[in-house]
Image 1 (cartoon, rainbow, N blue to C red):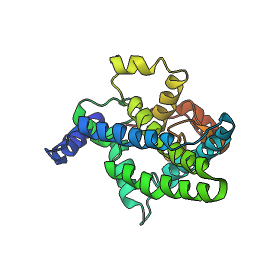
Image 2 (image 1 turned 180 degrees about the vertical axis):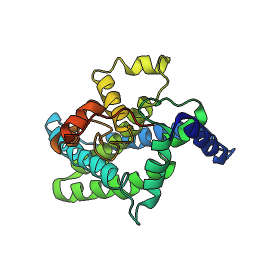
Image 3 (image 1 turned 120 degrees about the vertical axis):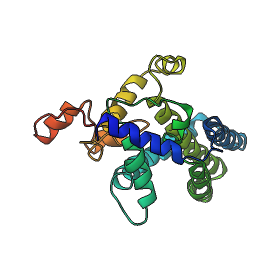
Length: 238
C-alpha cells in the first residue's frame, strides 16, 4: 500500500468512527480507570515489606511472555477465536501506521492507537482478579493484591508506552517521554515492528523487550532483521 492508498484508508477509517467518540474521554477512562484500580489495590496492602517485591518481578515476567505471545500469535496470525483482534491490529493499526509514518495526525486517530475500553474491563475481571485470587490462596493477602496491582500496572504501562510511540515528533509530550531512560530505544523497536515485511517476525513486546530477546525476535532495524534471516535487506515497506 502506497502513501496515497493509506491516506484513503485513513479517511475511510475516520469516517466510520462514531461522531460520539471522544479521544480525550477514551484516554481519560483508560488512565483514570486503570490508575484508580491500581491505587485501590495498593491501599489494600497490609504491613508491606520490600522483600515481597520478588513476586512483582515474577508476575511481570509472566505478563511479558503473555504480551509477546498474544501479539505474535493472535495479533499477527488469523485465528477464529481472535479474528477481531487480528483485524483491528494487523488490518487496521498496521495499515494506519507504517515504519516511515508512525505519528497520529489528529485526536480522532487515538481510536486506532488505544485499545477499546472493553479491554480495561476484561483485564481487570479476566486477568487481574483471577491472578489475585490464586496468589491470595497460595501465598497470602498481600501477594493477592500485588498480583492484581501488577497486572493492572502492566496493562496501563502497555497503553501509555504504545501511545507514546505514535506521538507527533517535536511535541511537548514527546519531549517529556524522551526524558525517560531507554524510551527512544523502545520507540525504535516498535517503529521497526511497523515495517510490513517483518511485523509478523519480531519486536512484539511493547513494554520491555524481554521475551523478544529471549526468543530471538528482537531487531534494531529492518537491516538487522534481514541479516538475521540471511536475506537481502529490504526498504521500509509502505
